Amino acid sequence: QVQLMESGGGLVQAGGSLRLSCAASGITFSLHAMGWYRQAPGKQRELVAAAYRGGSTNYADSVKGRFTISRDYAKNTLYLQMNSLKPEDTAHYYCNAYGPETKYLDVWGQGTLVTVSS
Image (cartoon, rainbow, N blue to C red; front, side, top):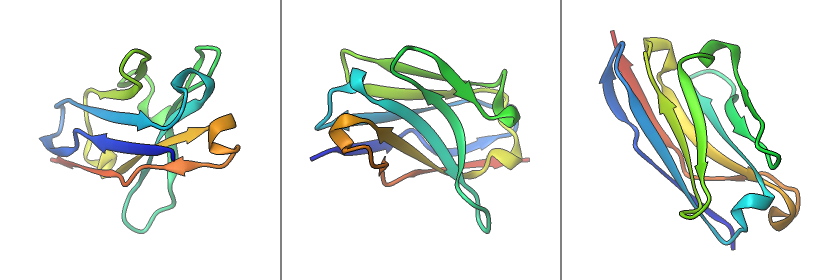
């Protein structure tokens, strides 16, 4: 059974930093595309950053230059380093996995809340 467990959210002042973690179990980490999504109140879930099997990454325009996605293959853990946080980054952040062992269906974690105060 594929499980994703996020951690690292919290309250931070604008301009601060947080690092989110997503521990993955039940999958061969390297075979899957992994991503971070977020959903703010009243808004649709959106892609924040993705890391693909070949090592390439993709970022939403709103976070380019501020956020960095990375993987630790030894720990089966995905990270999102968030710097220069803005109040508009406030949202629930979700980890996502997609690939052969998820049967090419999206698998989601339970989410972690990031609140950025002005």
